Amino acid sequence: MIRSLLAAAALCAVLPTPALAQAVSQEQLDERYDRALAAGYKALFLCGAIAGAERNGATRSVESVERWELSGIQAPLDSLVAEMRARPIRIQSVSSDGAPARGALAAFAVEWAEGFAPRFAVNTGADGCRLAPIGMDVGTALDIGEPELHDPDRALTAQPTAGDELAETGMEARYGQGTRTTAVVVMRNGSPVSEAYAQDFGPLIPQRTWSVAKSLAATIIGAAVERGEADVQAEAGLGLSANDPRARITVDQLLRMASGRYSDTPGNRTDPLYFGGATVKESALAWPLLDRPGTVYRYANNDTLAAVRAIEPTFADHSPTDLFARIGMEHTVAETDWVGDYIFSSQVWSTARDLAKFGQLYLDGGVLPDGTRILPEGWVDYVSAPSGPQPDGPFGYGAGFWLMNRSEGVPADTFAAFGNRGQYVVIVPSQNVVIVRRGEDPVGARFDIAAFTRDVLAALD
Image (cartoon, rainbow, N blue to C red; front, side, top):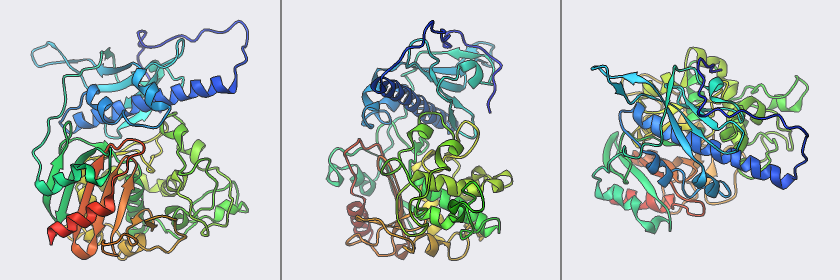
């Protein structure tokens, strides 16, 4: 837990003690909760985008993040986010000549309710940004020295990068009306062949992976299996006791979205964890069982979160950060909840080039260029096999990866990492190709990744 050695009276509001308790309607409670979630959403995305860019030696502005990551999001958060004031907190620093200098980003604060503490996302550095629980004040949230409070700096924005014609086709509306492509990288035979970026983005600008993180989670678990520290057929440690039927759920069933557990929304939105400051332990692990494990497919963030937590003891000696570094993903950061548990169902920030390296690892059978094996022999076949119950729709599902075996004109061995708002890492073993498409697609717009994959592969022939 991050502790504080500071107080920021300009941001900390004192919550008055009411003379009398007041009853509120459910509608009023829901409206207040939505505001709290919207403020958490805004704080976390501003912190993640700007701190991530600065960590990589690049820049993003508040205006840029508002234009891309904070627009086109789900209702009612979209309208609420737009009206909320955000303020960066930077550590005071001194330049070489002794003059005050613009310091490192420490946190973002977003005001959301009069008389209540703002929502804070705190920049931890190597582990990205953490969202503080609702109601936590800045004095408790930070342990980083005396901060400076700034109005949003809108002057620093990444400049567009000249792109290649093939990659730039991914920017076209023909792949989905209203979609917004931010980056495309195409690799063949281990070398980049095409790359393009939208305004405000470039090779050093990370974006949130959303559910592409689930495929990264499967990779981290695979690395633990290769080291002999995990077994996907082993029980995942769920349930309250040995006779709890949830105790028999395996890591494999979690990776295949087949735990049989209940989730409260289709797709398991996980808003309390993602934007409310709740923890993995309190929000994802204790859901009841509805079906026999291994028999029903239900896409659920909670399953990936539980699978990663099952191998958490291995992180002391083999952290995800270390694995990313070995793969060459130098600009990728996996974020955690407030108590340090990884949110590998969604909350990873990465660049398009890093995700291309991730895809290349699978083309290379889990072996690094120097011959070091990272993933078990046969792991590519394992994650891309539809051996569990399957979803309805145009794509199948393996173990942490989507399968494009139902996509007309796409090689049957193609599998992919998919994420919200149009994040895609497509892996085509038979053609030794990786296609990365990043986006900030608004709600209701869907990029046609199957059509784009077909067109890219045809252009490479």
